[in-house]
Length: 319
Image (tube, rainbow, N blue to C red):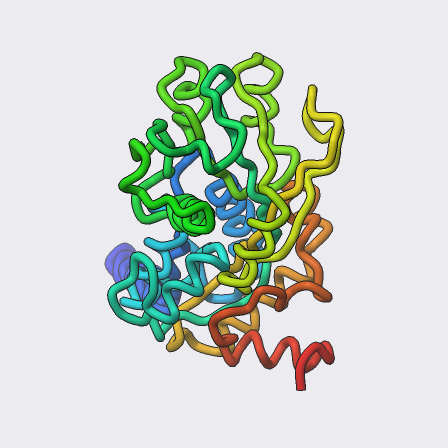
């Protein structure tokens, strides 16, 4: 009798534990976070953000995944296939207003915060004869992953020189392939909007495979006039070996974005965790040195999510 009673009690306890486990699993909310292809800055930033958010969010887990980059992320957010994602301001503008590669406005995307600023590095193969973006004509130009922000930026930059994709030999390599393509001479030019200094670019310069070329002052003015989501920028002389002079260029902003209908309470938590944990983020990735409240809303071309707006109102950044 005692053994039977013990068996019944044990079964009930086991059933309770299993049932509770299922309830906890059901109560757990999962969010999908899109960055870009493996090997690039967006992907590594996404990995760091995912860990910090997962360590601090209550009742929510973030699943980080590789994607095609900025343009792809905007499309996925708009369709609700991603919950949060990284995207450059250039691609966000085209997405929200339905320009460039977007056939229709992506009105369901919303901003959370600027993460960092991406300076346009015009990287050219030594021996390619390229001294300016104007010389891209007829050359093998890597546009990065299909649908990414690199392609958007390159098209915008070439436009002020009177060039289109039809004027070049377009190639599409991932971030992890970038170094090898230049080392083996399969690419002549590439525009990478990224943090300076970028290790992969520095490696190629040290190997005497590439050099950086500036964007001419008149083209910078025209580029910004046509694309107000950009700003003048400088890659300081000495940032890269054998480049003692300042390299004049432009910069875009890398934004953390979300979808319009994500719960404002969740978005508020996300932006608060980011700014409450800046020291942790900066210790794990140098790009977060650009993450500051005073520039959190720079180059904003899509509306803020209400959850993010609530946070910035509390900080006095907006009314």
